[in-house]
Amino acid sequence: MFSGIVERTSSLKSYRKYSDGIFIEIENPYEELFEGESISLDGCCLTVDKFDKDSIYFFLSLETLKRTKFSRIDMKNHVFNLERSLTLNKLIGGHLVLGHVDDVGIVQEVKNFENTRILEIQFNPIFKKFTVYKGSICVDGVSLTINEIGESSFKIALIPKTIEITNLKYLKEGSFVNLEFDIIAKYVENLINKGWKSLLLPQHSQE
Image (tube, rainbow, N blue to C red; front, top):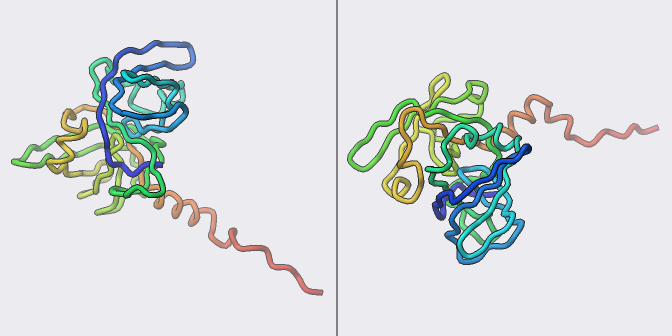
C-alpha cells in the first residue's frame, strides 16, 4: 500500500522482452532496498526482482502490460515516479493507494500558469461513479485532488512542488497516464450493490 507521495524519479536503463512479459532495469535512487519488496512505479505496484547499488530490476507480466500505460509508451525515454510501500510509522501525506491500476487515462488539455499547471484527463466513463469533487485520484502514482468533473474527464491542478519532484511535468496533450480511483469509493459501491445486510450474521432461530 502507498500514499501517492512520490519519493524519487528514475529512468530506464534496459529492458528485455519475453513471451510472457518484460524485464526492465531502472536506475536505483535508493540507498537501501530488499528483494521482494513492493515499489510503486508510476502508480503500478511492482515487486523488486533484484537490485544492486546502481539498478533495480522488475518483471512486468502480460496482465500488467495490458492494464497499464507501459505497453503504450516509449519507456526508453520515460521518467518513472517511485514510491516505496508505507510503513506503520510513515506519514500518509496523500491518500491510501493500492498500486492497482484501474484505467489508462489520456491527457486532453494542459494549461500552464505562472506557478501551476491544470490538466484535463480523459478516462473511461464507467469509473465516473468513483470520482468526487475535491476527492482523491492517483495519477501516475501521484495523489491529487479532483477540481472539476465532466462526463468522461476530470481536471487536476499541479502545484510547484509536484511539478518539481514528479514526472507529471513532462505530460502533454495525448500523453497516457495510469489511473487508480479511490479504494474507499470502490468498497462503498461494492457494499451498496451487494447489499450491506449480507454482511450481518445470520439470525439463529429459537425453538
